[in-house]
Length: 277
Image 1: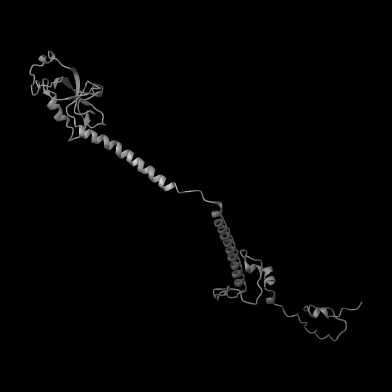
Image 2: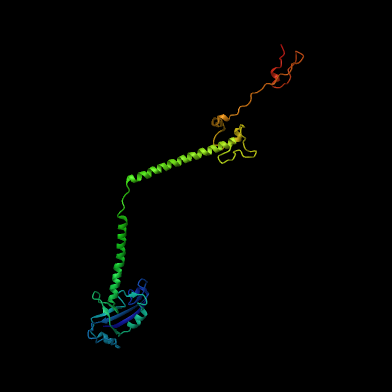
């Protein structure tokens, strides 16, 4: 049986190093209650429901432990509705109040008002089984997943390397074909021939190049893939030959044999008779 000997309510963190009741087990305490009790074994029930109105009489009685700290549970804290500090302080803070209590054999100054052995065992079982069970399940899963894995053989990687080399070779060939096709299209546009899409390289306007006519370097521009000098080498059969130059007949000679040369054309100047000296 326990009897409340003294109780006090304090403010300030320096005064609240501990509290008989605290709502919330993680927050800082700025207001606290200190409830001190005396207790002794009462197998015959002599102190049951006997409240002492005279507090001085408590000091003259025989007690097993004096000035023990009273808590609602072992932790001294909790959350509503399980722990309500207002109700707890109203019920146990009055000096001379007698009530049954539970004390600790390891810490005699620790006294609690209620004790549920079955609930404590269940909480302890859940705290052990759930975390360790999850840990073991994770280990078994990892073992089951990775136990059958092995390093790849060198022979298994060889076909993949061959296929990669083949793919690289095909890509280079495709690039060469694309470049060659671009060059051929540019040549067709220069010659005015239709390309592989059916269009004419020179177009229908006056800016295009006609087939069969020679093209000067100034008309080709500077951004062509091939120089104009290489065109006859690519298609020698399409070389255009100019007709030979023809000489015009000479003019008739004048009547007089002595005549000064006059201004004549290119053809006439060849047959003018020079004066004799």
